[in-house]
Image 1 (cartoon, rainbow, N blue to C red):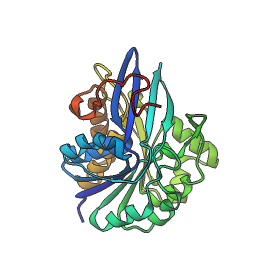
Image 2: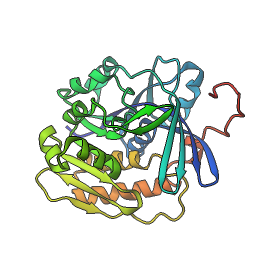
Image 3: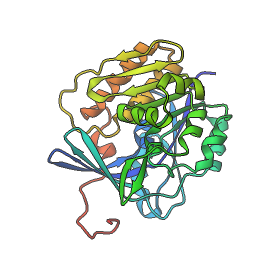
Image 4: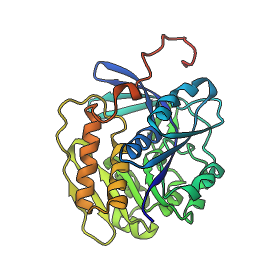
Length: 297
């Protein structure tokens, strides 16, 4: 049937973003950005995450916007410190939430058409969930980001997770940025096309930010897409999540061609990077609390 309802699975986070000389304290996580994008495009959106009781208020803006937030039990909320240094992003994770359990995903499967997996690190979603989702009946969309890095001394560093294969096996639409795609190709020793054959993936988007990107569709020649110019970069965090949600909606719900869907998704991602897609108040968690204030680590 038509795609109407989506569940996005992954941490909803408290992000400290340092961009140039500016610092933002914001709501983050693929679940937030993708969930809001699906909602904006007229779908019903659920987010499955784990947020600590003390931080429950961070979900309020999502709920007010109309996203159904299903938060499970955890002692800590996932926190990120994102520093943009030239074009590279250095990420620290002072705290991580408990893994999102498979049974919570199973509980919503009958009510959704699409399952969007947005893990931020290898343990964000319970490991055995990936293997069980291969036969779940919903369209599975995967952002690989959390499965191609690991936590090491408080920082996230490149590493291809042992759970990636099961996640790729479950997914029909996959997104990786250029460096993530290179990392996967190097780990498996075969190219994207061969990976798609091996894991039964229909479409794989390789995103490149301001350089545009490329969509690989099975047994078709790769289709590059341009990135529209962004006037002023406000905060690039979440651009990939917006792209993947918008691409999925355009392809699956509207039936647009790969070329049209990727152009549309790149346009929406650019709008987000320039701060024009979501009202600032929706993502803003206020000013950074002073050091030593409750909730700081």
